[in-house]
Image (cartoon, rainbow, N blue to C red; front, side):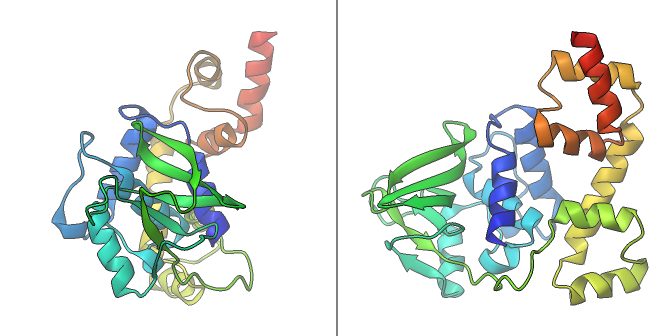
Length: 253
């Protein structure tokens, strides 16, 4: 599960406040009800905790560390779940919390990606108004501590919410209550899967542009990304990646 979490977090690296990926994060947060403390997030809000919540939703990990829009309330959840460790040497997949003023109040939050010696690399939302990696000494004075969720042991690789949604669309999980039961029995959140299914199908319905128009967008804008990100975005929008890529290659040669 830790790898699913980190892979989803990595997919947002480079997102900047105000761009479409930032809006996507806010929209995904607001799509899951009930909203934490009943608060609907805005594009102008601080969003590090919102980012963590969305990554948890997408990877099926929110059960293990909660959903929040505030850092201090996240700390309370961690303590209630008995997963708050304080200032210890972390592991990948742990959650890092910062206290900038050392006043006992959580100010910022992220995910531990790597630990090398005494150095920890994180992925954080709303760091310099973007999603980015940062590196610190694991015991830096501004770090309040770490939480280590009780993730399930890896007796097999858990699929991502996006993977499951595509399988649902391809009729691999049945329908109605039968689908909900099968997903739940397999350890997945059926509601989150259905929301992702709806998002994908809505995007496909909107994808009425010609292959040629999309190929030009790939060349002239950053909307579709690169590599695997481009392949996934095109698939989610209902386009054949190979056809689009062949047109791109033809247009730029």
